[in-house]
Length: 150
Figure 1 (cartoon, helix red, strand yellow):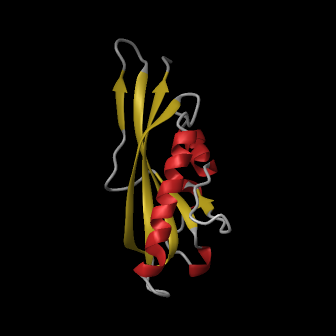
Figure 2: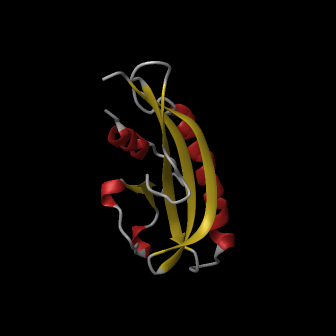
């Protein structure tokens, strides 16, 4: 049986940041909200349902052993994009966070006893979520999980 919930818990336990004095909270898939308040930020949301991502399952050789490839989007909402000085204020934060995330992914590559992070890509952007426009960075993890024969 897949250990995706454990994998998500382990991703949530990673602690990337862009400022050591600012705590970033995490919302797992069972804590997601359709809207955010400015006071919620910074916050990470773990998503396994994204129209741009996909998941694959393939059998390994003969038998029932399989490899599942998960795409997990770890989305950081830094702040409401139209507040303050806009991009000049938060663009450096997005890149500092990306550098921190790279180190976290390297340190936690074996994310579970059955799973490994094989790739992380980053997508800093301005996006709408709910009724506001946010400065976000997506860390898109490719995780391979190996399932033994049943």
